[in-house]
Image (cartoon, rainbow, N blue to C red; front, side, top):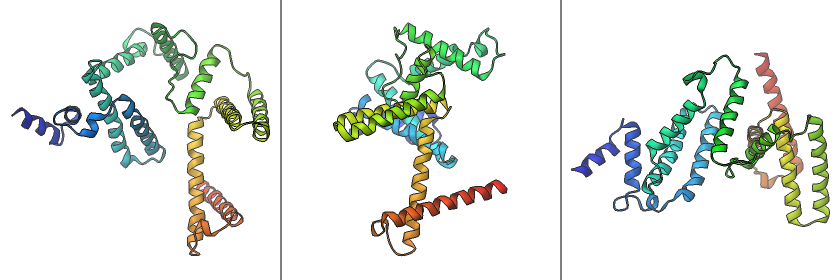
Length: 282
């Protein structure tokens, strides 16, 4: 009878959060669950969690609102998965995870659930938020300036966060010109490494150059992850235009050459600019 009730909870639509929690518990059940799900652990699931977060961001970037609901569900499943494994290990469960973040929101918004003034700008509130995070890090004995910047973040995002932390204690270039000068210096060092040093040295210099580029983006108030995603999308869009133009002639890129494809790239770029101008006029 208990199994029938559990199956009904798992299979009947409209069950919301209790249904999803029951499904995950069943999938992880050692006797009746899915062999693949039973074998997973925090480390094996973590890459899927990151991937699902990016798919949410991708749907938002493309304004694919019909897809966003499903992507958010996939991301929620990752939280439920980790919470179930935490419950099995006796560390935490979904309820404690939800309670913890709820308490964090209350603690970090004293201007909503406390006696602090709401008469502050958004920038003031961000400063208060960072101050609260600093106090939390102190209770975790994260005494160093860069403690708590997650290692698993995308490299560009982590670079910006590290730089922001250092800037708060005065370790920062005062103006963009200084960053540009450093960029030129790192580019020259990369060229020198390419010509004279090992592949490991080239990789190190490339990392230094990318780190300075992230710093330049920060000084220009540009999100480097967003900027690179946009550049990726632009590249894919224009390369597809090359493929389409060649396909009209019954050919593929492999049957073309660089000079022809470069000319088709320029044509696609010009067409985008013309379309952008037309859109601006209407």
